[in-house]
Image (cartoon, one colour):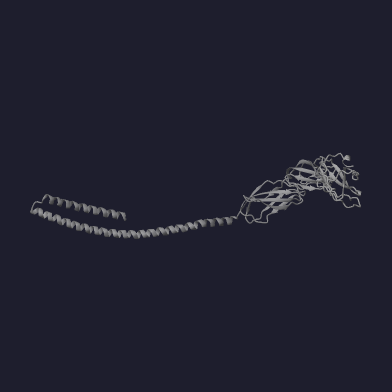
Amino acid sequence: MGNAQFSFGGAAPAAPIVPKTTTPPAVSAAPSAPSVSSPTHPDSNKWYAQKGAEFTWTVPSGVSGVSIYFSQSPTSNPGSVSDGLFASKSYENIGDGIWYFHIKMRNSAGWGPVAHFKIQIDTQPPEPFEVKFTDGNETDNPKPTVLFDTTDSLSGVDYYEIKIGEGDFFSIAPDIAKSNPYTLPPQAPGKRSILVQAFDGAGNYQTAVEEFEILPIKSPVITEYPEELQSGEPLIVRGSTYPNSQVIIWLQREKDDPKSFTATSDQDGKFTFVADERLGDGIYKLWAEVIDGRGAKSGPSEKVTLVVQKPVAVQIGLKAIDALAVLIPLIALIILLLILLWYGWHKFSLFRKRIIKETKEAEQALHKAIKLLKEDIEDRIKLLEKTKLERQLTKEEDKIMKQLRKDLDDAEKFARKEIEDIEREIK
């Protein structure tokens, strides 16, 4: 009952094992049931999405024949006709379902018992399905509930994988999906898609995609806040929102990163926030968000501006300090300049006195030199005049006398002019 009873195509049996020429020992019992394994479908209790199957076994010494059969019956018998002597068998294009490989061996004592090896093949994905939101595809519920479920006729649905927006995949068991509705993890406001993949026992999967939008709830309203605040004073902010909800207060100083603080609204939706830390000087932006009891979030409220500055007295003191910080160095610089000017003037006065003294001494020496020169020239002129009375002067002597008179006049004028210039410069 070998290949004649199975219609599947497959590879030809392996080359027959050539028996040794030595005389085998006597066999007293038929072979035991072979131990079969499958490298393509190793676990008989698992499903595989592979249509080709291979089976292997060991041929003991003394075996002279192997009979095989492949069917969907768990108890089939391959029959007593040998299909050859080989240690493996492969089949291709096997249909989906549960199949059994049957094998027995023969030796000189006869045919041994049949071994059965089960494989399970499923190459089809689960049935198509849809994802539906119980509250509609637009809701302010941060944890929307969805309905999805499918079936798989062979290996069954093993698990679901879900991906929301840009998040990572996460798995849920099929019994969770069957206990519909399924509640999604908390979602922030915004549009996104949900992708659900249903995997069967063989790893085949079916995909369903649906888009949805989480609408933000209403933002808090800031009703009271200080537009101006002196440093050291506590910041107190009041507002209104949903009852018994968490309020997130955001505070940002100019270009710094915003800081968040929390407060809780009462049963009437009123909230009060008192800052624990004192704010430094600067211009601040303040706004609020709210998370209600369901976990739904709002968008940011309208931003308000407040200015924090030092008290007036401190500001005046600081301005005075700033002014003194500038004025004191300026006064010191002026005093230094006055000292330098006095020192320079004093030095100049001493220098001027010395110049005047030296000038007067030079003037006296010049007067004395001019006087001596004048007396000398006059003596020479008198000598020439006396000679003129005794005889007529030569032209050369007369010329010298006139030149001496002229030189004397020029020397007196030059000396007088130079002395006047010096006296005018040192006044």
